[in-house]
Image 1 (spheres, rainbow, N blue to C red):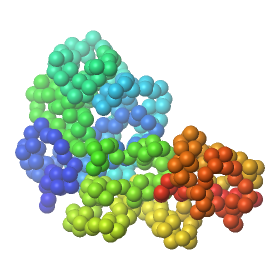
Image 2: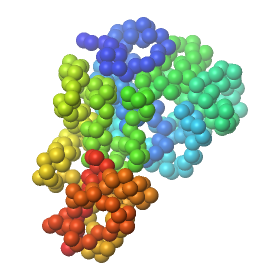
Image 3: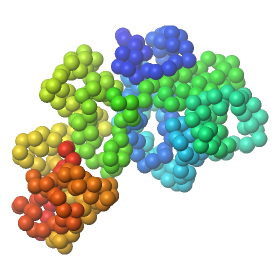
Image 4: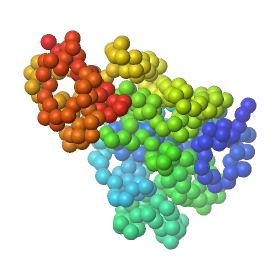
Length: 405
């Protein structure tokens, strides 16, 4: 049987290791318990979390036991990694609600019957502060902490003592999970390297046991920018925040240079097929993009929704036939005479009216194949053909406005 370490490395997931050869040997010869943490800072995971979810899935498929750690405790402080300003503090009830949503989304990637789910609020929120400082804080050097990338980039703008605690809290999580479940590995994004490494070091200091740190690449496009960002914001895994159609279209429209990498990282397709699709060029690359969009959408939203999104996308390139699966927004006759921008804002086609005006001024708003030039354009009955009007924003984003009698 293949070594999961080699599988993950071939597909391009892995970035840094505390002990590379030893880790490869352990993953080949033993069944380990590992953890990945998810701080519930929003009411949905987004595309940036996809790498961790896929790594967790692959490791479980090869017989290793995942711990899904919901970070309701660490979320009360907020991770400064990759942030120029302090994160917004959330209410406990919102954090708890977000955590439940995360668990539902993560369950699409792993079998919870063969996994462990825990929450660091169970041990962080009731700590005795002085005892914690004496038992845990004594093992951390401020000099070493400030050399860590997660803190270095914040020093110029200002780093609060509040945030300085985050590394210690995450390290303590690893120690607790090691004691509770014999967890010996932590995986996380490469921006978490310093935090993960300090946790493994804490276990060695406190328990005298080996623990291992592994980071994965961040989801970056060929221009060096984080993927999953659009003019309308993040690409969320929740279909109420990012529609299935928009989710599918995001991957259908990625740059040619990113197709092979995304097929390897975000799908379960065999690498032979990934390499074959990655060799396509010119107009043929669209076949690979369609497969990518379908496979990623299937993982998140299921096969039926993926097929609908695929059919809708293809319908838009077949002169409007079979448009039933294109996203739609229903209005009543009372909305006739209303600003088109107001309707598009209500239908979540534009994030703001000022953004809608910018699209119109750049010639990117199309109503029934006609360019809209007037930012004050209102909807009228003549805009509807059999109670339906088709709006396009930009090159690929479509919405059917349905007039209800």
